[in-house]
Length: 210
Image (cartoon, rainbow, N blue to C red):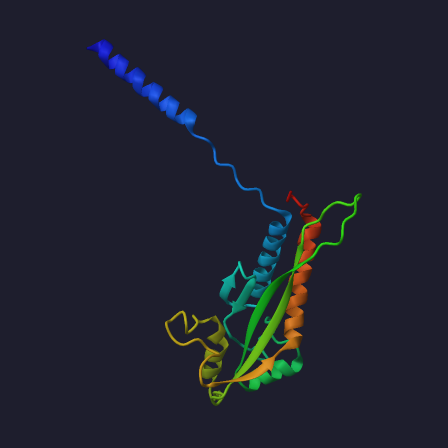
């Protein structure tokens, strides 16, 4: 009986060792320099939009497009916000409800031509930014008491209406489209592309494609 148990244990151990030996480790697919550069540009765009306090609505990596939810423009006392590029924008946002929506498109820039003595470089990415503005046609609430002023001050920190299951601010029939905001778009675009360039200078990405 003892010898039979020993034989069974030996056979089980041999089977386990044989099965482990037949497993082939899965090798990771090497990433090209162009893919790594796209990752840098993608993260730079997301980080910059967060700095401006925009919330992401759509992030399509395959298409290279990021869009945000409409965000209410800053009031004159919100000095910590940077989403109003000019003093006029600050004044306008303080007198009426202005919404801004950002669209970021990541483009690939072809590398310079290479010769027999130059090293192949991967395609770099850069951002193109568009900012659309809209205005609510509803009357601007009037502040008639200290409590209403306090409520207005706390409004940007409350949960969004879409998070509470309500309509998205800046959309619908009560909104008038005003066109583009090139000043703010230029600021955001410059910050994203500067962040991309800085990351590439610190972490250069050689081309690993065949």
